[in-house]
Length: 544
Ligand code: PEP
Ligand code: MG
Image 1 (cartoon, rainbow, N blue to C red):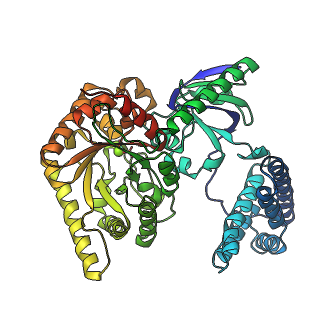
Image 2 (cartoon, rainbow, N blue to C red):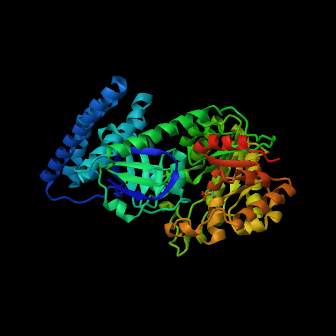
Image 3 (tube, helix red, strand yellow):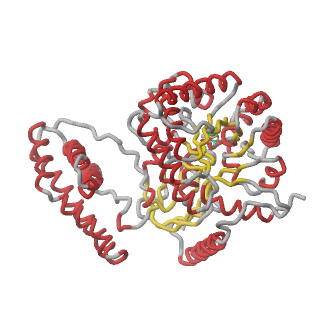
């Protein structure tokens, strides 16, 4: 048994098996092979392994979830033996002298496209299955000894040096029991994603941790204390099982707060909204009874895509969110990439100081075609619910004036085309630079609301790169400078008839809730699992 200590970013306990995150090539490379026969043999061996893995998963699923749910693994085994599929792979290897991985990947693309184009919904759904079995085959080809993330059907604890937001979003959330990273900082987007995903996560555990684990090791992750225990003894495991049960009981108690008001003992009300990174977050928003969505990080639509999402694709996504929230407020933040959120197809230059660089609104104002596509999609979607649009990384009045002029242009355009939209969409800006907070008296008259992004506000006020784990000791999120900037922004917002919310991670810090309410903060937007604990805190406060 060995212990490590990191920083817990989502308080819950997980006990399970390690899956060391492998940063494989996302793209399968095409290589020329001389020995076609040997390549066939590699392919046959990988197929045998994939079928055996699926057989094990089928047996386990049969015992644990019953025949109906287990059947899909039987279907996958049959698909792996399908003649057309196998012939296509063999053909490619033979006629083009390519490696088996490439032959599998390109067959998968062709078959998936063919299924997706069929009229029958059942057949369309097979596109995902053919991708799934092909990914398994490729994994068996590239690393036949590796344990797959779902081996044995168990959820795994993903352990990595660090995870980029794009890597985190690409993980199959249903199979992740917890995250542990050797590096990383608590305001990083990976930590934020872990909170949103409602799973225990510990970051900054140190390099030695990775040297002490291997796939399949049993570990305990305590997201409350940041403790990690590798190969726990029976007593320790029992202690943590008890802690898990207590967490469960507390969670159940919080369920009783569903449907109750966010009101203090003296009658002060606050809106408690939730933050999401994509459509799949809506379930958690509704399950946790959030009053709305205070921050939809729209860049995740771009991160999950292989090319710029079209106006139509974005419109469908935004409309879905608005319709799912059935008239409750949904605040969608326009594209915020750059810094730690890099997207290949944007082809952004490498920068020495990316956090102080070309990101967010700076990209949108420089490349208006991208911005306009998103704004058209947003305004079109506004006809289907209660939309607010907000803009990140604002530092000046002129930026806001330029943005508002573009919005007016889009509205006029839609009107001219006879496309419906809501004339009363609220427009707001994020207060996440000290500059924006300091000139909040000049910005407030221009907008309907402010939303304080404390993650970046902390980074820029304290000059602490939020990605740099070494700076954690210097990154005092309760620093008086930050609190004063928030208070100043609140006063200026109210003076000019705007409302103010906080959507950074600090909104969920219940030790500050009283302070925020005394400042007059109107809305707190937090990761969905924090909605009910925050409601609990609010309802126990007395501001008299
Ligand atoms: C923030 O900076 O506080 C914020 C909410 O935006 P993000 O974390 O996505 O940068
Ligand atoms: Mg930010």
